[in-house]
Image (tube, rainbow, N blue to C red; front, top):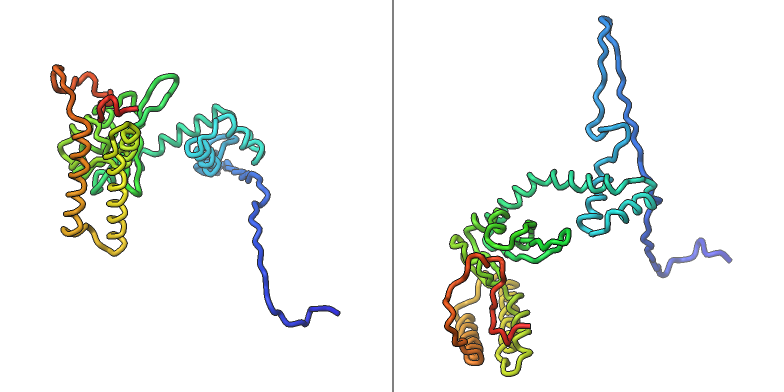
Length: 290
């Protein structure tokens, strides 16, 4: 007996996600030449993307740039992917040229990004080393929750930071790790990065007699959660009654840290050698650093 007319008493659903067959779309453009009654030949213009007898379209070029720059896939393997998945042969030299051309098209975007960062109330700044052609370079960053600007430079100090074009024109707050070149910018309000604090406190806490470091970690994490809870209620700042115990606890832990790490006795002259601005200064006594 069939069930075609039976009552439906329940239903189960399952979804299968898959991809359609992948194939390249080739669009042929044809430009006619016509001759008028006076014998003058006039040729039609090609579409902007048709720059040669055979060429790669904007979507293909965008995908190549994404795979190389965002996904960090080696150039030769990107060529293999284009051949295997799309049946499009793209040489490694062509891929390099695509990425270079894409970078050149970002100038207007980068100018806008810099201006948005300069107008931001709070900007985070950092730098990290990167090996390029067997030479140490530095990737400088300036960011907010929605914006990130990277600047690659052979230098690590103020010269490179100025070249990025943000901090020297910023009027808000800059959050950083306390590295001395950032202190050269008197046009901003300085704030220290707690992510760096937590990392250094964790290292300090591994040394005997530095229990204060773990107490500070717990304190910072708890204060952060308190701020997040306040934001969830629509508050834009903590109340005076909330800040008073926070400041008292912070001062107590800092005092314990100073007690555990008295200043070293030295006859060395104070100050920083400007020639060494690219060196990262010690932020803790030597016996506390890894």
